[in-house]
Amino acid sequence: MKKPLKIFLPLTVLILLSFLITKIIFRINHKNEVTKNIKKIPEFSFKDINGVLFNNHNLKKNTPTIFLYFNTECEFCNTETEIIKKNIEQFKNTQLIFISFESPLKIKKFAENYQLLNHDNIHFIYDKQVVFSKTFDVKAFPTIVIYNNQQQLLEKIKGQVKIDHILKKINKQ
Image (cartoon, rainbow, N blue to C red; front, top):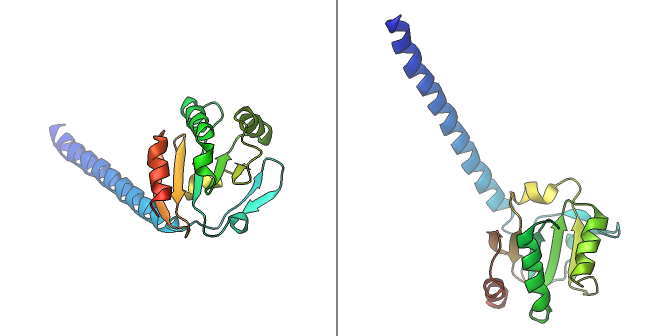
């Protein structure tokens, strides 16, 4: 009985270790692939809260772009949006693209609540298929992805961040 146990236990540990190493390598490769794919704003196509198609061609040239992945019920997302609203004048030369997988009606109510619908540089996008999350490897709310005026990635931030940090990034260009 002891001999099979001496073989079985190390073999089990070896198999588990191999499995974990494989998972880690897969995850690292996936992260590297995502990082490579988002260095420049990738091709995208979503609908806005009015059902109108919104894609790369709608982005203004030579203008910094900030994607904000949010959820209307996320406390940090609400706080971040409130801070953006209070500093809206500082974002007048930046495109703000709010993206959520929630219903267009829910997103619209969120936008109305923060009085952000009447700004030409702010768009609210509905991502029914959760494509943004997959493309950018986003799993947390809020996540902010900042691009410069040449559509080059500056930073991807998971969680709430101070507004000064965002403004420094987009104004540093």
